[in-house]
Image 1 (cartoon, rainbow, N blue to C red):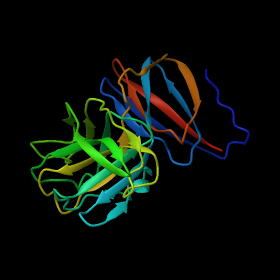
Image 2 (cartoon, rainbow, N blue to C red):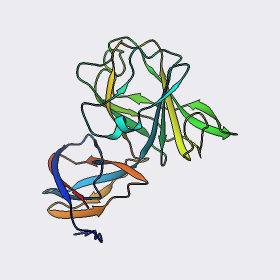
Image 3 (cartoon, helix red, strand yellow):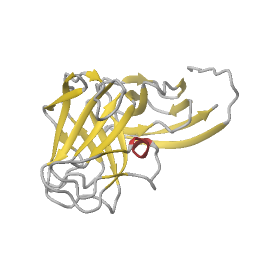
Image 4 (tube, one colour):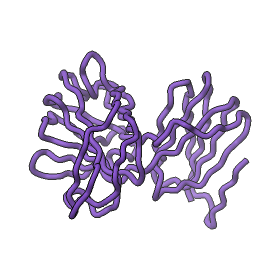
Length: 242
């Protein structure tokens, strides 16, 4: 059992479970918690994804910051993509490269208009200005019947040669930037409850069944987990706050 040690006593704990299957599960870190404990009775796999550090919505004129709403794990807050037009962009800045992101979408306030997402990555930055290039081999798990952002799902793509840097209009942080726009105007009300970073690879670590694992969280670099299983299982998760 791996044990993380902090110099301050435990302040708060929180427990939840994740149902594991052969389809990867995506889970944001719980805000303000510093350690996590895992237990599953059968063997499972785990990946650690980079932190989503900046979310900026551009409506053609101004930029709005929705970083907190995207990662706070609160169903009452959200990133609004209401009537998002083809000239609008949602910019996502990460602490490291990602191969996609999982969208948790409100069950009522979702897109119903026929559209796809035009996904791009930042391939160059010069004097604070980014150049964006289409991703390759993208797959939109939020699509149903030709309608994007209509269900929870993973938007994935081949890991691109994304560069790290600061884009003046977005943030002073040195981040890896991605953005998307719709191919047609989206529905009047769309709420993205969570945006969960995906790992840069699906070569997850192997975790033994019947053992407890405890880790200190790197809150600066990382922000989410991916879990996988060869069959099915229940992962018990305990978050620890100091």
